[in-house]
Length: 379
Ligand SMILES: *Cc1c(COP(=O)(O)O)cnc(C)c1O
Image 1 (spheres, helix red, strand yellow):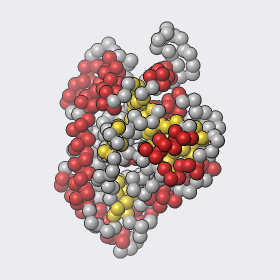
Image 2 (cartoon, helix red, strand yellow; image 1 turned 120 degrees about the vertical axis):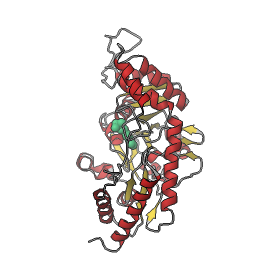
Image 3 (tube, protein in one colour; image 1 turned 180 degrees about the vertical axis):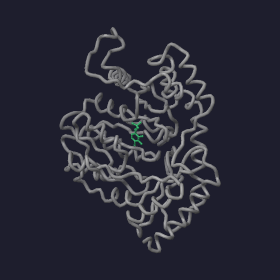
Image 4 (cartoon, rainbow, N blue to C red; image 1 turned 90 degrees about the vertical axis):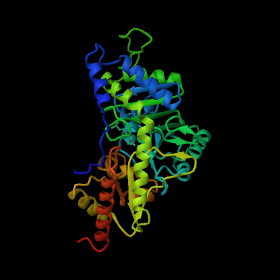
């Protein structure tokens, strides 16, 4: 793609930091892990951060450490990345999909209550595209119904709700550092929590069940290798030093797109400002207006790509994917009408720190031209 959908922002100082690790004797479980975890915990304002091999492994450890298992149900949106529901199924628990609200595209608190059963154990809240979910209502429901809250903040590092960082409001929250995220470690993730006992469980489970306070050979339970190497952590430490600058730049890119596309009646744009929230811009996703359907969207997506402009169709609802249709047919039982209607019309545009104004102009001009063609009958 001439203009990619995303691109990591790697500087010389990042490369030097990774090379320094390679020249050191510590390639795993060393000083960079501690430094990276301290930097995440202090940025988030919590006691503990536990760095792991990916966002997905972080979500899995949350399910596992909270004791959620066979037959338990966890409420989760279907309009999200499949990892959120997979993490629930790794422990043989049942994801129960709840519809989203049409503005921020997050779990609709008004639809949560109806999905709760005696088997419900937790709500997995996703802060989709970096926009915080309606946490005051969701926390209220969780408290009165005795449910845990896991925050999938994999797309939302730095986002805030009522002055509190996304990921730090529930029992545990997870950030992810794949190359398309706001900051990257190549592969990697981190769990944040204010519960130091829970943090201890995460540390044990990520390292084969070894209790670090006892002898290294003393495995107290079945764990995993969800460790993250010192190379990844060194990159993470450098990236975290620039987090404020990165988030400011991404907000400026979102504002440029908004200025350029605002007023186009065929597009629904993401809100730039929302009450009680600071958005951490992960991607810029526009929606086609309701006169279009998924065939129009797919054609537009194809045309954009054929002209060298990277585009994404996120998200394809989880409950409609083959592995979920067959393995958990009842999981789609709730009314997911917003999820399905919105998923048919979304289009993610190129979004990365170094995108230039002229590239944004080209993306928008091309998009408007192609949408007009689609409107006039694309066949
Ligand atoms: C990126 C992401 C994850 C985790 O992804 P990994 O590739 O495992 O790091 C989980 N949930 C959501 C919503 C994500 O966007």
